Structures are given as structure tokens and as C-alpha cells.
Length: 429
Ligand SMILES: *Cc1c(COP(=O)(O)O)cnc(C)c1O
Image (cartoon, rainbow, N blue to C red):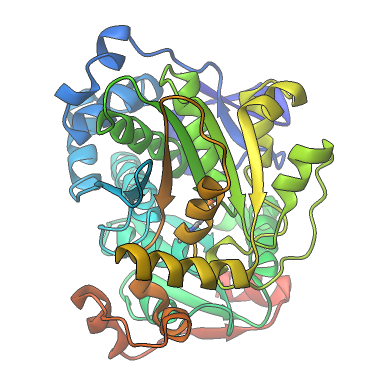
């Protein structure tokens, strides 16, 4: 399987090169040259496969020319070694809990897969690579944890000062070893722009081997398709799936679209967003209008220029009619988030986090047809946002042990202004 740039179909590279380069030099995104259809034998028997086995069926068409099958399987076993349960919340709404990994957010899946692929390629080529990642909170810690102590790989995390939760900050800044955190005096879009600029800086790229770990890297993006199959495997036979994805950069949602293209019968998708309603607006008007990001309670979704938009277009050959018929948009305010977290906790005892809450709300407002059930992605553990949660609920939620340990560690970050030159100079120092 080759991967082309969404800006130029003649720019084609192997899976390995797509992973190592991260981003094509023409500022597009890598995209598979064809979307493999999976066998009906597999699709009709999902329940008889383990999670890593589902991973192998979904991933091997993309990786088979570059990663031997036994190594792919061991990468998947290490990546997907935590539970991803489908938990009923209401009669016809379920949460796909993606937060049982080491940093308690769905990004663990892609980050761990990417780290292990890059580690495999870097060691095989005897190369040293530097991973650059901009984060609005969760990406950085998932990537940092995923890469901790992976040989031949250094990780540099850029995060917006004061715009991530105290716990997220500790998760980013306490790893040490091959992981460095840069605290940028700007917002997430500034961090993302600095990373993009570094990738386009040929002078810099001659001096060091850069790669990305944002959801734009194919090795982070593609394995996110796997849990859509796993979710379907846990649903009662004959039910049609409505899937609601709380979204920011749209990596998760576009991975779901890919799963559908590979043959998974998903009836409909909902692009659930907070006040940053770029995609819901696009789905209404057909105009994609990036805007400065707005700070909300679901801060991992505060994205004003969703980086995976070109992939969304690509899945549907840029046919807006098609896109519109398969995806609905929904957008909710901070007040909606607070109210629904309280309501659901009081009525069922289920604790939504501020991101999953948006996915849930979108389903609550969706008109289900006959035999349809709704699944929303619970993208992070509510304990990750304990300050917000405590404020909403008016009591102190208990933190899982894994997060409690981090809180008491010492922050280590390097402060930089929003200035590409400063970032550049620090990198080559
Ligand atoms: C990153 C993140 C999202 C948004 O996911 P995208 O793939 O960027 O759309 C949603 N919720 C949480 C908790 C996240 O960390």
C-alpha cells in the first residue's frame, strides 16, 4: 500500500516513509492510495476475534509491505493491551470507553501504535528521529507516554501555557528522559502552526530528522479505525449503528469514516463539537471556514482549523452531497455540557467527561430510526478534568491512582514565546 499527499496524488510513498516523514513536504496529508475492503468472512464474525486480532485484520492491508506480520501482531498486542468496553448509559445509547490506557484518553491507542512503528523503523535504519507534537492537552501526554524510553527517538511537546488542565500539564512535563515539554506563550493553534512551520523548514530538516505525532501521522490515525470494529462486535446483532464522535482535529471521526469504507456497516455519523463549530457549519453550508479557536470546558476539542479536514474530503472524493448525507453536525455550549453531566450523573450514576458529554448530547438530540442504537466515544476519563468536573458537580470526584501519582511530581518545562525563530534555535541547540 502506498500513501499519497492530499495536495498531489503523484507524490506517493510507502507506509514506512509516510510514518517517518509524518507530513508530506507539500503541506498535504498522507492518505492511502486505495481503501481496502475487508472480507465478509471477517465482517460477519467480528465477535470471534480478539481486539488485537481485529487490529491485525484492519491494519495489515496498510502495513504489510513494510512490517512483517509477526511484528505487526506484537505491536498491536502491546498497543491494545487495555480494555475498550461498550457501556450502556440509556436504553439505546452506549459509551465506547476509550480511556482505560496509560494516560486515560483515546489518544493512547494511536500514540502507542505510532511509537512502536517508529521505534521499529528507526532501529532497523540505525537512525535518530525527533518527534514534534503540538498538543491542546491530551495528545502530548499520550505521545510522551507512548514514546518514553523508545530507543533512537526524542520527543518534543509544544503546549499552550495556561490552557491545559493542571493534571494534563503534569502528565506532559514529568516524563523526562527522551521527552521534553515546551510551554508556549500562546494558544493551541500557535503551537500547531510552529510545528507545521518546522516541517516546512528545509534548512532545519537537513540538520535533523523530524517527524510528527499529531493525528496527521498515518500511524496514529489509521489504528483508530480498529475500535469502531471492536464496538460493532459488542453490539447486539441486527442493530444499526449511529456513531457520535466528539471532535477537535477530526482524526477520530475520519478514522471511523475509513472503517465504514472498509466495510463496517455504520448507518450514520455525528460530528459533535463544542463552540468551535467549524465542521458542523461546513456540513450546513458547504463552506469550510477556519476561525480562531474558542476556549471551552472540553479543551481538547478547542480547535479552530481542524487538521484532518482534507482527509474527510478525500474519503468521499470531495463530494459534498455524499459527505452531508452520511454525517450530521452538532454543536453545544459549556452550559449544555455542565447540565448534561449533572443530569446523567443524577439519573444513572454514569460520569461523562466534558468531551464525551458532547457526544452523548448529540445522540440525545438525534432522532433514532427503527432498530438503531447510538454509540458515543468516551474519549477521556472524567478524572483528567477534575477541576472542571468538581465545579460542575459540586463535589470532589475521586481520581484514579494512575493520575494521582502524577499530580505530586515536579513540572519540568522550557518556556518559549510564540516565535518560530526561538523554537528553531532551541531545536538546533
Ligand atoms: C483529542 C481529543 C478529542 C478530539 O479528537 P480528534 O481526533 O482531534 O477530533 C476529543 N476528546 C478528547 C478527550 C481528546 O483528547
